[in-house]
Amino acid sequence: MEASFWIDCPLVHSDPEIVHGEPVFVGTRLPAAAVVNSIDGYLHDGLSLDQAIAQTLESFPTVPNGPAGILALLEFRTTHQHQLQP
Image (cartoon, rainbow, N blue to C red; front, side, top):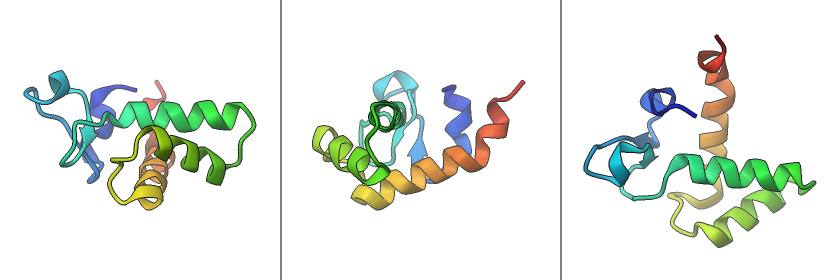
């Protein structure tokens, strides 16, 4: 997902001094794309959303606000996906 996609997401910011400007959760060095890709992978493997979130939090325990942070990130992606369509 393009860095510009996340520009309006209040949970994520981009700073050239942090992870080479990759969009990360505010206050962390955790790339938003890593969390989204993890969730998508678990869902693709047949896990429920709750299971996917739990597994993702095991891998990325520093997600701000835990499950609520992941759900907010996924909601942002869902409501702004039209920005990705050509």
